Length: 264
Image (cartoon, rainbow, N blue to C red):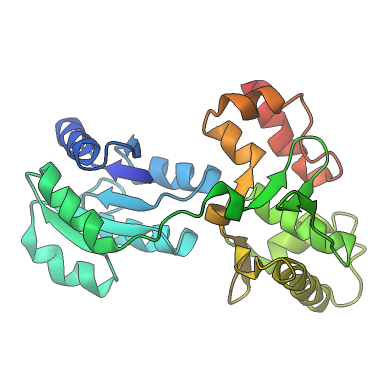
């Protein structure tokens, strides 16, 4: 489980971190003191399962931060941690999943986590295996996934690169057709590609990997076993499998490839 914790007061943040760690010892916990830093991490990495957030934050309060998080990661659960009970009603209006009063302790954190009823993560064998290093390839139970169009495969590659973030139609068109050769009706063609991709995923029982909402597409990273994602988590096997090439077929992937090169 990936958990974000945010509080602008260092002592309170440390107390919150310790309570979460005691309640969920196997969790990966990332601490933040500023909303902008949390949103930057959300944009560049996998979405957290849960965010524990103070409400009074400098620059952007916790209520507005919650809206930003839900826009970027709709499956992320948000639990407010605060010393001000008057915010409770407003919190629930924003569809917040829990509310903990300070001072926090492990038992209250555990109660809130249990109440979330988080789905169990699928086993590795149940996931779609994604190869980003070298050429982009997709496998289901060690068999290559067949795509009816090369651009449908590239669409999946782009969404994988975006790590679960919802991408607008305009963003996807600009990335996949840098040369402007997308035809007279790019939005219609993208809808066709999206349908083709959904059908290809559906043929192996993985249609729900593709997430759609009005004018936006994303992938459910929890259903993917991806070498790039594992490398970012520090998995030694994935780190050693990277030899300087990342999705070499796609020019838009060069930016991520450059970041990986300097990280290596």
